[in-house]
Image (cartoon, rainbow, N blue to C red; front, side):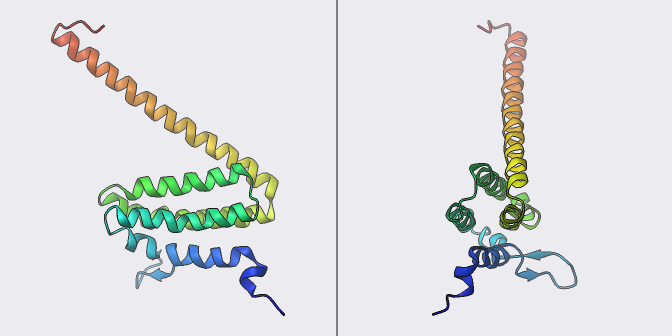
Length: 161
């Protein structure tokens, strides 16, 4: 008995899901494509959570095909960026048309299938780069906050510590 094409190629179902979530529809007269993700994200909180859960289907397949942790982390970063951008009022809706985490993750899985070593290496560097940016942003925010406190304390002639 012959198995279905989906079971022969574990990525075929994920390809269809990524297309459904990110690229299934096109705005008439343009080349702009979108999927269910920006539509679902119109519903506050529930839509964002649903989008993240649907995106995690790609992670499940990646785990099943034994993708290395570096690549999985890269995929999770893509989903996290999508979720964070999507949580912004108005800008989040625009970001859903630009940052397509599912399409990016599908491309990452396909690249891994062709070039596993270089994809894992690049993914590792990407994750480290994003972590450095996040730490830098947090450090800058703490620095600005501390500077503001010191400035206000000096204007009000209060002891800082």
